Amino acid sequence: MIKEEKQENMGFIDFQVFSFTHKIQRLASHIELKKDFVYLVKKNRVRYKKLISQLDIRVK
Image (cartoon, rainbow, N blue to C red; front, side, top):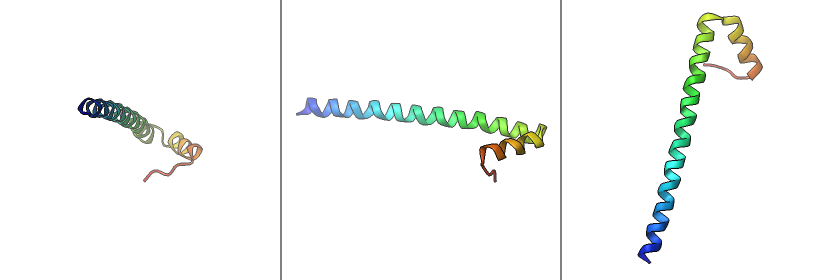
């Protein structure tokens, strides 16, 4: 019984590590994308507005 509980807990830990890793990767991608948008806003406002329109997103 105790051995089964340890195996279940190990599986849960593996899932948590996988889940957190995935979230960190998504956040890192978001930050990189955000940098690109900030660059476009500062350097090429027309291109930025065109991209926002093409992606059909609204930036606050």
